[in-house]
Amino acid sequence: DVKVTQSSRYLVKRTGEKVFLECVQDMDHENMFWYRQDPGLGLRLIYFSYDVKMKEKGDIPEGYSVSREKKERFSLILESASTNQTSMYLCASSFPHWDTNEKLFFGSGTQLSVL
Amino acid sequence: AQSVTQLDSQVPVFEEAPVELRCNYSSSVSVYLFWYVQYPNQGLQLLLKYLSGSTLVKGINGFEAEFNKSQTSFHLRKPSVHISDTAEYFCAVSAHTGGFKTIFGAGTRLFVKA
Image 1 (cartoon, rainbow over the protein chains, first blue to last red):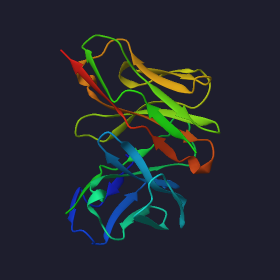
Image 2 (image 1 turned 30 degrees about the vertical axis):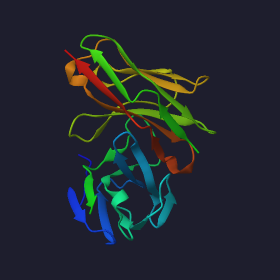
Image 3 (image 1 turned 60 degrees about the vertical axis):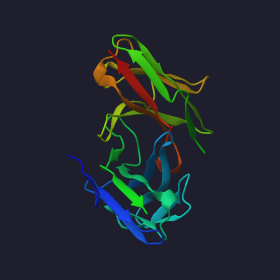
Image 4 (image 1 turned 135 degrees about the vertical axis):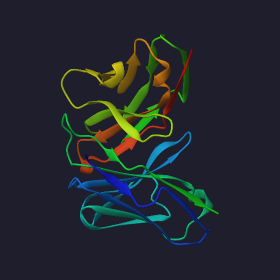
């Protein structure tokens, strides 16, 4: 089974802290994504990466950065956490094409609370 | 750039009634279209997707969706819902270019009542 593993299920941080969210996939997928999910707003794309060391901004990149040094790992960094970054963060991965067998594979999510 | 609009934030419906969840998208390039479902306290699962060919696609659990290019819509339908269909449904679009990034709508919460 494909696995997308997010390092923490729940995380509590203080305002101003630097926060790292880690995501690892075992399917050799080129594409990796970070979304945040908020009630009434759905999933909003923060950043995505289509290759090692490649990244592109999504719709809401402000206050976030990412790192992809190895193909299987995609990290989301909150440089200085703020309360409005309290959210569920979802990592996903996929191949860079769609066919009958392809889809986004999601991790189980990290619920981040910034106090 | 692509965007997705799910026209209903909540849809209450009685068990065994038909349901339609509406999705419109905008894009300057050709797209692939998806519906994902999230059951309470669970992760997202792919329900169905449109890649090409027949505009009517069938998915899991009796759901189907119709791609309408002229109306830029991809509405999800089920002829008879069950209590177990209570979940949040997300429409998503992925462009044929730009690394195939996938953009989601805000979601529609389907609530099936007995």
